[in-house]
Length: 278
Image 1: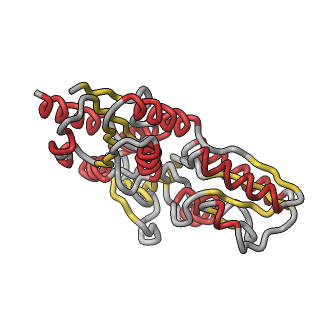
Image 2: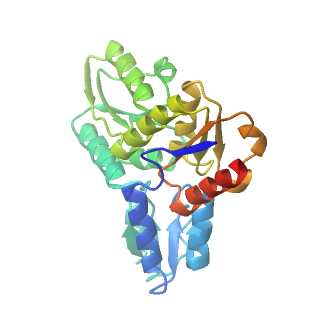
């Protein structure tokens, strides 16, 4: 059995920066992260053991404590409240997420009703929404557009891990009903590269393994894209989840990983596949 790793897989720049900065902060003060730093439970556990505690509510922290803002970002009111409490802020908002936040704010100030294309409960989408004004709405699919009360002037931004296909479909649907449409494509380049590399590899192999947290939107999207290429696809978090029976009759297996999946987990999956193929 041959094993192939996608050309683009695993940690993106923003996640690498966040992980490295978090580990560097440990030992200087008490370090907390507002929500899991990344959507990978194994890496979050490694951070916890190093001294980075995950909290969902920072209001009980003490002045001088360090609060990490994860790559998904937060609404501006959250940052203001944390600073007023005297917390030391390490803002690790991904640069691409920051750009989406700024565009949403700009559109709102220019009088557009902002549409955020993304998953309604995703923390990144909620952070962008905080910059977009009270009239802003979240749209997950083109079907969501039906029944929405939208103004004549619509501005659009996207969750950075959205698929281009879904984003394009929604934009075209909005184009049909709006008098004026202003669109910022805020899907990050790393997302595009990983999605395209996964598609290319899926066409060349018999089976795909997509490695990453089940709570990771971009990893789940990679799995969906591979399935759309017509190949058996399994979304796993760690090597121990691999079922050898999946590989019966398989000659070529492809592996890809989400942007929040560390190299050590991907390497573990490759090693397990090599062991099975012996």
